[in-house]
Length: 371
Image (cartoon, rainbow, N blue to C red):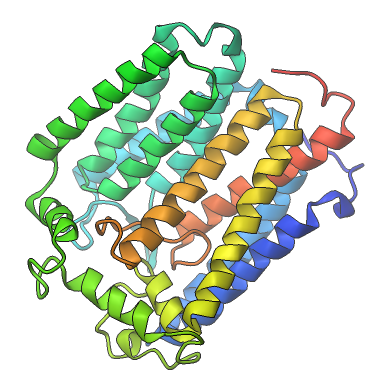
């Protein structure tokens, strides 16, 4: 449902400006570190598409998702089919079956799935908040997350599985589950982690984790990426080497610089001050998102904001953590910064829904209807 009566000034200006500043820093960094300017040009196209999507979803009444659960289930099923098709027919890139390719553009189905999962779980719990104490709702909602998590683990994509689990855990915890159910949940997750380590993780993934626990174990092998990222971050010192001056990225010591290690490349060129400024922007962005959710009177909107914040925060923490040696390398990109169209457009869509919550929660006579 579209509404033409809501003026553009009702967009959250702090949220919009902060988001666009992060995107600007991303484009400057990608322009600097990309030896092939085709990557920069392709990302510029995705940025244009993402900005258009952001404004479309900002003015689309977000309650269309709350009121049409069948549509969300259909979208969820489509993304699951796409993930299954990848395992059967998808090409492998760096050993992972995670992308469909249309000419030179890659589409990663797990990215829209994350947003669909946030919407689906928000819808599920907003209808059942009165009876959330019942264990069956934890099990059913867990199945929504477990199926796609299993499919991405088979790709194998450990990082995305962690993000999916983070989304479910955040929404479930904030929906009001009982303490004993939470303890049971932690026990189940511990068992799943052991099973995953023994039967599902590939040897190179286990090696990444063991090299994280012991960084000096294999500095030329499994620990190489982390070591080079730490060198890049440290060499930036206080004010950085300047745009285009990052030796780790330009001399190709730092792998996957446009995606997995863009924070390290940014810190090398912008230094400690630049990295703090970027973290400040992310903090402001997350703060505004949570503030919009807190002011909303509808459970669906509150739960969506919590889930979307968990999606962003988990990716930020995992990406930066693996760039500074605090977490094992899992291939998670930095939101709005890393190269990649599927992730960027999906996140811009999610940000548009946040803006829609802000506008329709304050402008619509139906905003007081809670569910």
